[in-house]
Each structure stands twice: as structure tokens, then as C-alpha cells.
Length: 130
Image (tube, rainbow, N blue to C red; front, top):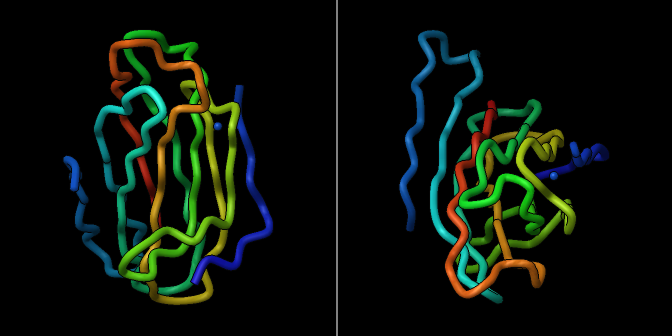
């Protein structure tokens, strides 16, 4: 369950690549990639093993790194993403961060906020979590 009080925008299914930590107390880093079509959205889900900080970073947007998209973090109920944090002005480098109270299922959504033209926008997200 995402219980966070902090969300920051910095100036904020598909392929995923989790890294398995050597120590189970170390954070896990997952990379998600995909494309968002005009008026579209892409959802990625991941699980946390314990309480701690979750940080999602929009690492790359193409073909335009200055493109503005939505970046959303929430709780995954198995069917839909219940949003906790949203940044409707996210560009490359945007960060959402929060704290989870324990093990659970979370989700991150990248969506068009009216700025994606006829061609889809590609993105790379990095999520670090307990």
C-alpha cells in the first residue's frame, strides 16, 4: 500500500528488467519501456517486498526529450491502478517518490496529456523500490 506524502516533479505488459539485489534488504531497480499513443496511456506493475521508499524516474522520452506527459504512481488492485501521485507536466528527468508501508503491488502510468502528435512517444522509466 502506497502511503507516501512526497511527490516531486523535476524539470515528473511491456518490457521490464528487474535487477535482483545481492542482499534482500537492498532496493530493487526495474526498468520499464514502452510507447504512448495520442490520447493513450501505458501501465506497468511491480511488487514491493517490504516497507521503504519507492522512486520512479522518467529517464528518457523520444523523439523529443522536452515532451510533456503524465507520470502517475499508485496502488495496483489486480485490475486497475488507484493513483496516489500524479505529475501532469512530466518531462525527461521527472521523479515521483513515496513511501510504502509494507509489501504490496504498485503501478506506474505514463500517459498523453495532449502533447503527443500523430507518432507515438517512446519512454524509459526507472523504478527503485524495496
